[in-house]
Amino acid sequence: MGDIILEIKDLKKYFPLADGKTVKAVDGVSMKLYKGETLGLVGESGCGKSTIAYTVVGMYGASGGEVLYKGTDLAKKGYKRTLEQKGEIQIVFQDPGSSLNSRRTIEKSMEVPLDIHDKMSREKKTERIEELLEMVGLPKEYKSKMPRNIGGGERQLISVARALATNPELIILDEPTSALDVSVQAKVINTLIELQKKLSLSYLFITHDLSLMRNVATRVAILYLGRLCELAPTTEFFHAPLHPYTQMLLSSIPVVTEEEEAIKPGQIISQGEIPSPVNAPKGCTFHTRCRDCMEICKTQMPVMVEVEPEHFVCCHKYKAKEEL
Ligand code: SF4
Image (cartoon, rainbow, N blue to C red; front, top):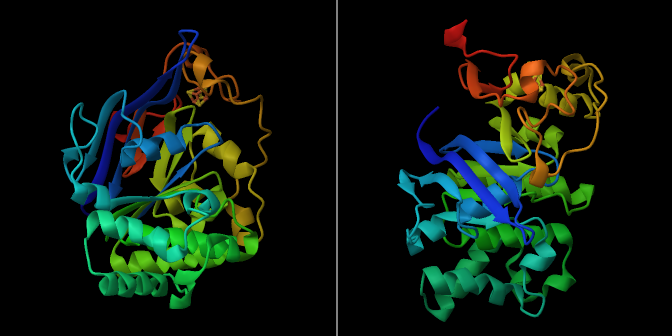
């Protein structure tokens, strides 16, 4: 699958609470991101997707595990990221309204990363901002507008342009279209796909919208209560989902075409609510909602096994290919 740009190993992020309890937001996640691919990280609200993103970009320190970027562990205690590393990993947030300063023109907001990473003259800076706007399909005149005077889709494209200012190699897209009207979501997605091809970018695409991943992701990973359930190449993921939770999610996606209908698992009624990460169930954390639950599931946590090349699943129903 090519070179690995990012590898997360047994990543943990715990938040202590005032009453002495702990929220295990991310609890032992391991995955690789290959150069030039889009890895879709999918799960319900509160499953730990954004916590992984913030730990990778350094907004949170890790409670345990490694975040290996090009082989260097960025999460190691005491390790200070270089300016170059900070520029190479960028993030685009869900709400462009709050990630852009409402009292600054687009140009002023876009100058910030340029001033930090790439000191340049006034003229060069203006030239670069116009070039970045053009890269995301916006006219250069947009630089003098205020965020409130443009649409949500355009604001998100400006957030993407600002992320590109430091010539990143890896961009974390944290629900980049979920705050947008459906009519502008496609434009933002198409721009991201074009930019990826043109600039050989790698994306960690965080979303709760599984159907979006069918057209965007190279591989899809499913997260539940801070742990990975399944990770597989996109085609295999949609044709042969293995984990009961993945099957439950896929069965609830509305389908349009006959082809989609043919591969959709039969209707699986979602049981129960997602438990609190403060009090995660023992054994398999999904056992309280799983229709296939066995006795072992209530006491023993399953481990991730590779059932087919690059297809991983964490469930007692499956064994690693070499064990069969
Ligand atoms: Fe269901 Fe057991 Fe698999 Fe968990 S380990 S998903 S409870 S079958």
